[in-house]
Image (cartoon, rainbow, N blue to C red; front, side, top):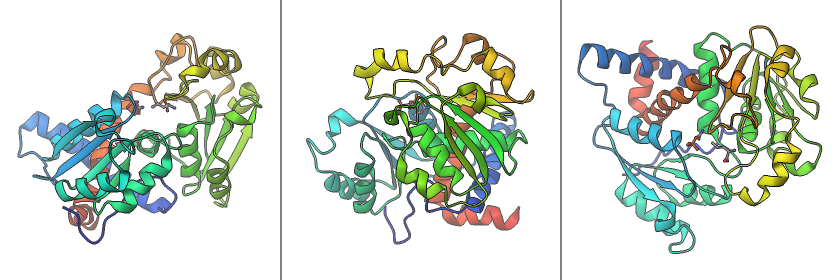
Length: 325
Ligand code: CP
Ligand code: NVA
């Protein structure tokens, strides 16, 4: 395990936009390959055969945990699932020791943690790739799957208008980070209280991308005008449970419902990273309606993360694909 040219995936900022599009093309191949394997029973595509990935979950998960574990298995690898509580990140064990130790056993680490600085430290001390499976700051694997879903459906275009309605949280931050490397029009409609604003540093960094527009406004109807994508997430993120009552009150006007959808482009799609709460951030009618592509984006977590794992763990194979396609 380990090696000299380790690559991490903690966020989008160090990447360039072309690399993301390359990853999407490989994700299309990975997705098609999976279907082919299932239908024809051909030799399965296993580019990370025999490699192992340690996964540390310090917060609950359904999609991320299942899609990574299944994805690693499908690619021929093995996932070691660690409950964050039992590992005791920075309580039972120092993060630098966890990083070095897992680097002796494994080929990569997938981690869902609270403070982003902890995953940065994990990556700094690990000699194997570290993948951000969500922190309080960001959720890049999610936005990778979301943007890929638009790409796959032919909805990705320069200046695509993505309107995020709700909290300027980790998911919104990752959209903003993506706007720093790919040209999109991103609008966040959030409450006026600054505690619901996205991360200032990420925002300032992303605004350097000349061809992206990033707006923070407070009127969801105004934001939704001509939107290509209406996006939302929970009002209360993991770790904020004590604020739930207050958040329910503050975010009440920020629901994606039929009225808001009417303000968007007639061909707009609705996205949500899930878990979703019908009747809170999204109405049941819209969540389950014809413009919702929510289950597609959730499924695509599997395909893009598999592509990412191949890129990080078998770069020769990843390069070979791009040289021959
Ligand atoms: N969207 C997402 O990351 O879901 P989980 O929290 O269930 O993994
Ligand atoms: N913002 C949410 C995303 C869940 C996938 C949270 O952090 O709980």
